[in-house]
Length: 178
Length: 300
Image 1: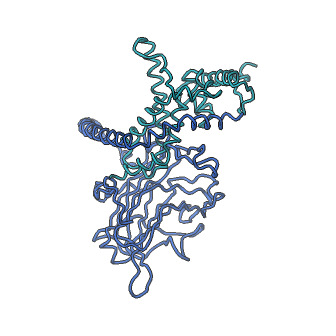
Image 2 (image 1 turned 90 degrees about the horizontal axis):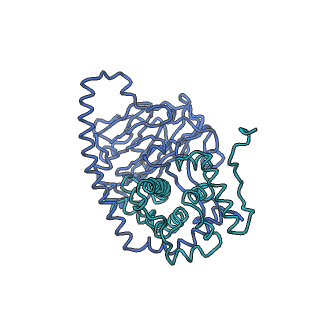
Image 3 (image 1 turned 135 degrees about the vertical axis):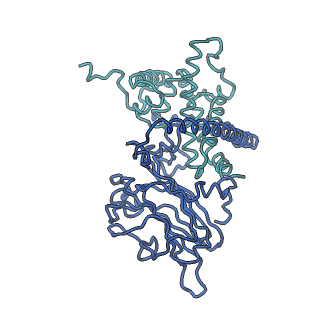
């Protein structure tokens, strides 16, 4: 067994539940989330010759999950435009996904577009700034603000609670308008 | 409702079954196989790329004059990189008394004035048979991979180690170090220098024990902040230090002598990132020894 195999084993032992949760939040699907975790682990361990420990590896894998997920979203968007018949609109939820979306927040998240969902996860789960979310998603800050605003509106309606403990972001910069 | 916590709870609830599948023996084997296949493919592709780049470089060298700056070890502004520096004790290694010590009552402290000689210095003859070696590279974390910023997660709530985690700043410079040999123990620190005066200390790896035989280790060592003189959180919240004013110091100790003279300091390695890279063999000592492929840390 190589040193990296050992780190890989430790990573799975220690962090699989966290990585799985992150994959699920990003993709909204258990199957897609699992694929995302596995693909990202492979990407990191193939490219990184030396991974000092499982903790560092987890950081690399989480970062890879973000970039792989966002790349997939962008690729699907392009293919949907140039060859709509070649891309499934949305993966049909399986039984486990239906159970997972049984709670109010899960049901509300399921109503979001993949871009809105990703923006919400990066902003409110990863605690990135709006600027950082925009950089990760390679979008304008205004676009991210719009996604977040729309998503929070939908979540509030679906959950029946309009008092999320988050700061709301202006879609339009008020200083510029005045 | 706290959306941050709610998202975390929702993800954890939904991911329990996913985590069980990820932890299965079948998935572990699949992942290991995919990694090995990917590395083989990458190695094959890399060899082709190296050949192509070499061909282009030869052509460019024939056509373009190269200025003196081409040998500058530093990268453009904004990217910190120096090295790699690779040292191994050899028969002709410099012998001298230690200029600094990292342990004991006379261990280096902030405000000490040092005159350090970059490179490897042997202090005890037994070092010549100990295969003592060190490989170090100074990089910006974001540059250690071509992917998006890496992050080492740290639990936001120490009481919930499996809970939400923070990331780290990808622009933070750090030393990546591998070191070892047939030594009893080792110590590694990164010193922030103002001329010859120490104004910050970051403690890196250290190891020791009763076992004899080879002892190898690898890991990262941060750049000390200005005024960082101990390991308290207050100390490391100061202004970031300039990585190009750091000096990396590693020391190695041997087994105690039968005459009761304590553990002898065998050798010191001092690395100055403003100096050009040093390749002892041209091949990473640790790769050459198969350390990372075999994962053999049994000597530790």
